Length: 435
Image 1 (cartoon, rainbow, N blue to C red):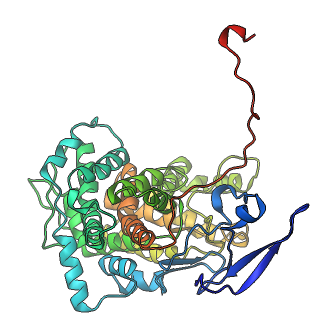
Image 2: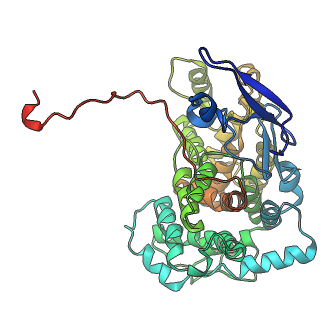
């Protein structure tokens, strides 16, 4: 979009006021936007859009979603092609820099990330301040925010070099912190990162190795982990990304902004969907009860809903789900878990839902959360870690949007307005005179 020249004008007719002309701008793809930045100055009125579902809050060149067509592109590349042909580190470079790297650029980027995976040794003390049964997401919010107390040389957001260093640190240290949160929750010692392992392999190593025994994951598991990270790396202006941008608009340091994003992602309506899908499978319990629960899902008077099916954004099939479906079966084959009752139930439910006329007509296809939850459970992650892994993967997207926002000359501190419906001005009554 170029705000130098509008493609047209929209006229807003307000009773009792002169018409207001508003410029219209076109993006490279997707809906055009009506620029309402001067609406209040010209009309004395605000727009009303709870949830901002019809409001473009920024200009961005990172990720594009077409919910009706069921497409998701990072910097113009389709998510299925990236998931199949690329890897998470290459996708990180793409999201941050706008282009796929050359071999030399890729090697340099991986080196920079790899040599930032260690965390300050004193950071371990923060973990011991949490109860042993603290939720890993509570730990993540606190520890990531605390990074700003340790890395003072990357807090100046006006310095491009410091922003770059902060970006490397966040992407590199998030797997280490996530693994430490898991280890602390189960009472095992922390495992240090290894520079000879890939990003995903290193995370699995830090999570599942113990001093007495190394964890050597099957390459199928490593690839599945990498795909999960890739598929969750960014998703346009979702709630947590918007939170990061809003926090960043105040000039807050990058570690605080990402901690704010983690806190938002923790909400069950945002990052807890794959956990909810597994909880649903546990509730159904067995293959024999699928028909009963499908009937309940079709009953609008029944509160039961099929979790992991359909998507708020995608009105067609979730483009990430196709890759995850394939990966799910690869993982179950590699671990020989097709006879596990929960996974047999999930696969049977998937088959029925894909063939049932009710769900097909409404395009309630299994989404990425349905499959990712099954994969993570098969690998050995408890459900309390699912959102932690989501925040790990999404960090690069948050960082990319934060960098884009800081570099935007039109960026201003976020300040949504409101439709006030409270009391009008009234006099103060002293306490002894109140009836």
